[in-house]
Image 1 (spheres, rainbow, N blue to C red):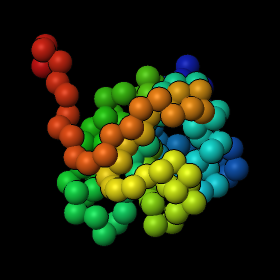
Image 2 (cartoon, one colour):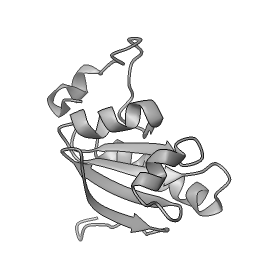
Image 3 (cartoon, rainbow, N blue to C red):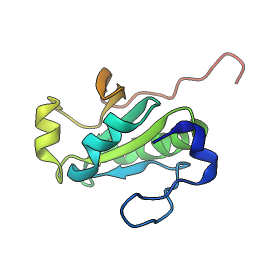
Length: 122
């Protein structure tokens, strides 16, 4: 994903469906590697499960981050129940877990609920 073209309204390379970047991009086992490897901006991935209470609490924050960082970072979600091999390979031991990738490489990770950081100007 090329950040310079975010305002153009990117489309899925397979089906041509518009990709909304003002909300988290749902990844699956097929799209995960390609997305983190080919995106030229940081990618924050929220590892979650539908049954996870803390994940549900954190979902609105992830939505806010996607809207606020559109074009500067890609915010994505990966269901750990549907992508167990990826979760295991990244040693995701609990959820919610967020991992930031840059250039296809893991840069940082956090486990659990974290409050949204606000700048001093907010």
